[in-house]
Image 1 (cartoon, rainbow over the protein chains, first blue to last red):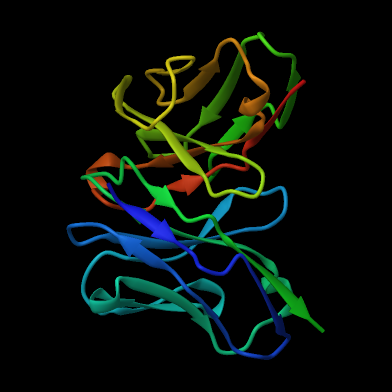
Image 2: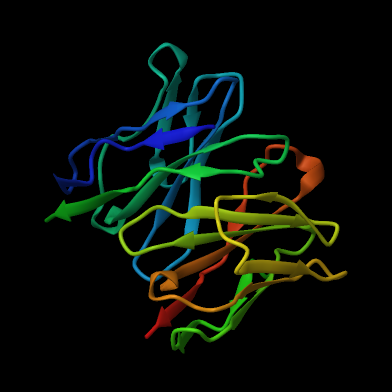
Length: 114
Length: 114
């Protein structure tokens, strides 16, 4: 079965600094990969997704992620972090025709220092 | 266009009781998935409904059951509540014909079991 590992539980960056959140997946076939963001007390909002094609995908709010099959990774990046980016970030891998068994990582909590 | 809605927002129950949570999918979506998110964890897949049938199930006991109605809305039922069932329950909707397309999440129902 597919699985996701987010090695960093908590990351602190200064506002304006660059950001990279790590995600490693395990899945035998070509995965469907997602990054979601969750603010306190809220549901999940999709930042970006990868199904196929260009391995560098652009998302909302200035985020991007790069799929590296050789490393089984799908790291999320942002060149300049804003205070409003402070939240919990989840990487997920979907499987099956309709992603009917989506597996999430444990999440990375991002703190932004002024 | 209303997104995914869930009710109630918060719920407090005692051990042994039964609870029903409700979800209305995003307009145009026909598939509903339910997830359990314990505090500090990523969401865990419970099950998915399409055409009023359970299509896929995660590693949850039979105490967790669901239903999908002809208008695509869905209910999650949990019997014989345990303290460990305390969590945020998330509903997500998608369009099956879209294949591996993204799931849109609702804000969740916070269940507390005392």
